[in-house]
Image (cartoon, rainbow over all chains, first blue to last red; front, side, top):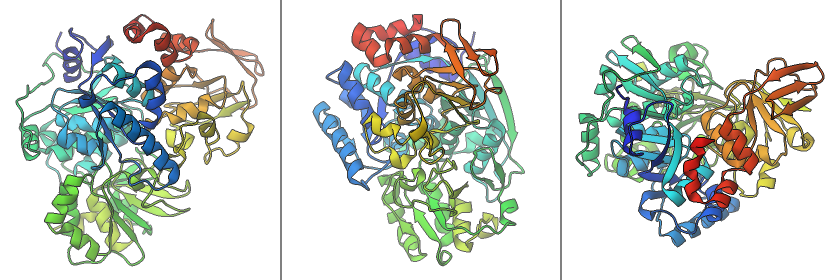
Length: 417
Length: 164
């Protein structure tokens, strides 16, 4: 019987041929725990071990609340730093974990464990990247292993040319509308089809990232020439096997999407599958208090290029708070070199240091009662970005940028040349 | 009593991000449902059940959500289904999560969980609901969580989980 990509990657990491439903104790290529999830991994780790299995295979970024906004958070970060120092693991302050890992660490075919729910993001590079909690991360740091039930795969084929004003975020919101918040629970989503083949890795990372919101254990795109180009851009081109699902692999479900007639989409609060065309919400003339362009979903240089093109020479609506948080140090530097940052400051936006910040209501843009935020992030849950009475709308960087100019939720198509 | 919730109760509702600033489980328990059900933390009593619909614990991987519920000293969570990472965290912590059709359960109903026969008795309504407790969940609940299990049996015992 043929295998899916996920089944092949699991097989390569447990030493035997496995299929969906099999139990595996797999060897991990990398374990990630960040400044909040790592804090809870320390106590269980020291209960069962004294030394990590391999300090080179453990990645500890400070991104969720960095630089620390409070004494309580500084205490947690200091405990993690002490652990990292003892174990010989560098703590990295270079931006959102999934972005930094994609740029530097994730290779096609890898099996990676991340103590963060958006770990499926890295699958855009052709790896199997799986989210867990702190205790699993602690066991993995001690042993280099994790147990899994090999998951079923849902194949999502996307075809059609992306219409004007639409981006991979609009595509994935359309998929989320169909799948709902648990449509992929326990499953791997494999994205395929001509549209996905044309997407570069940064655009693919948005698809895989949002798959977490459908409950996916992991999401991936078969590595190909786009992957090769991405690795090369990041100065780490390596030879890799272009692993693909076999023609006779067993998929639990195959879904086809034609995006030829797609319109810019927006996820209305408080659910990820509450997606409607932006033009429909625009008609309601909803005043926006804050626009957040950031997070592991959408704040790569390609996203900032779109925002720059729309904002150049204009001003954000008076009184509106526009926050731009580049996803990583690398993205920040690229934006600086291209003159984007200067322009963002001139149009009236705030540019903050790379990290997660406002996405999870930690710092740098916490919402008050009844405020409306258009965010390029991934969760519009009640209370996610601050007050439970605030309203979060999720959209592409283009829709966020257009809304920042007008002060109401706005379809970006008239603002893009 | 029971604390009844609907579908898709996410971990931001259980422990909002701004409250995840401690590694003291008792402190975390004080933040459980702090904004979504503010009375929960004051009125929850040992033996209470959290009853929910589909996809309980979705969203963020934060183990704080499962820890806060565990240290609220509830007997168990009974839900139609669970999000994957939350369920894994619960298995690891020894927080009992059982699967059942909770449609007929109301907050005031008196419930009794019979783990052996996998039955939830609704004494108020005089009816029995069949529950499912996955074997690994049950075993590690009895072991007091995966860390207690590995401490007792050694790290190589990770491979034995398959047999649970």
